[in-house]
Amino acid sequence: MGLKDTIHKDIITAMKAKDVHRLSVLRMVMADIKNKQSQVNLREELPEADVLAVVGSYQKKLTKSLDDYPDGDAKNALINEIKVVQEYLPQKASDADTKNAIEKVLGATTDRNFGSVMKLVMAELQGNGDGRLVSQLLKEKLS
Image (cartoon, rainbow, N blue to C red; front, side, top):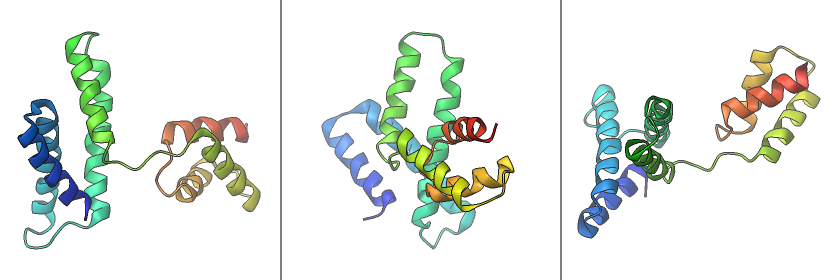
């Protein structure tokens, strides 16, 4: 079962449970997925990687808007919305995994150009690395 099918199934479950908050979040995610699918081709299913990218970009958009809200109910609702979306994303690599990937890449290459090494580390983490953490740790290692 793909991610899109899982989200669709969870929408139905949220409807039955009358979980209004979860339902609205999942509907927004599904709307973004369908919008992306309409941009590509209405007759073909969106590849799983593209569905995951849409969910990831939705989560990133929510995280960026977190700073715009003052502390209070609206910010707490946004935090809860981010938590719902994160359930559908793969787990990020831990700090230790990130450090190990950086060490492995730096040991395997003589290139010390930040951009190219960053790209290699993110490839090593298979997209599960936190870009900010990788950037911070890599800058420390290269300096």
